[in-house]
Image 1 (cartoon, rainbow, N blue to C red):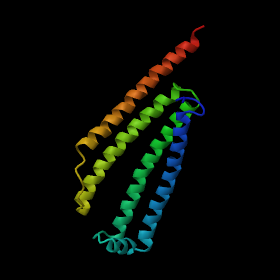
Image 2 (image 1 turned 180 degrees about the vertical axis):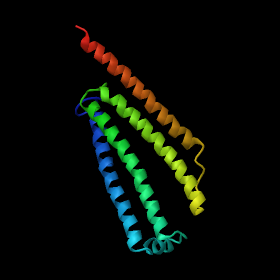
Image 3 (image 1 turned 135 degrees about the vertical axis):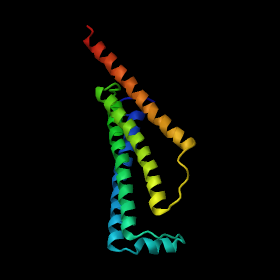
Image 4 (image 1 turned 135 degrees about the horizontal axis):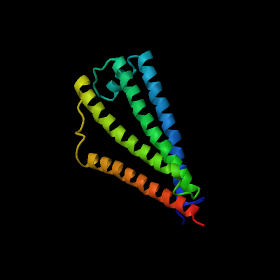
Length: 173
């Protein structure tokens, strides 16, 4: 099986990314709908949590704010998916070292790093403001996340060098 070009693994992955991309739109819509429903029917989350035997003392405004912050977090993933789809689109077309892929990969790296920092800040805020307890954000998960961010930046530089070599080859007679 081929890895690049039409009818390859890259085009299959591009299709999978399309499904996830539009699925994220649906999830963001549902989270925003949940935020609106909490504001319109303030007891809806409290009733649901009581049925699940979970307790909460958050006001409806705080719950709506948490839904909106979660929607914002998902928008970050949506942007990363958008850039990833663009990279895989060029790979599916067989254009591996497209000059724009360097920029896209850098944005993916900044997006992943930014989402991780945003998650750290959200944990601190939720623990301090709402007295919620979360698992620590250090350990193997944090190492893997930051290693992934660094790998994306290294790939961006590899793509940059590949695009440069391709441009030199195009100028060679």
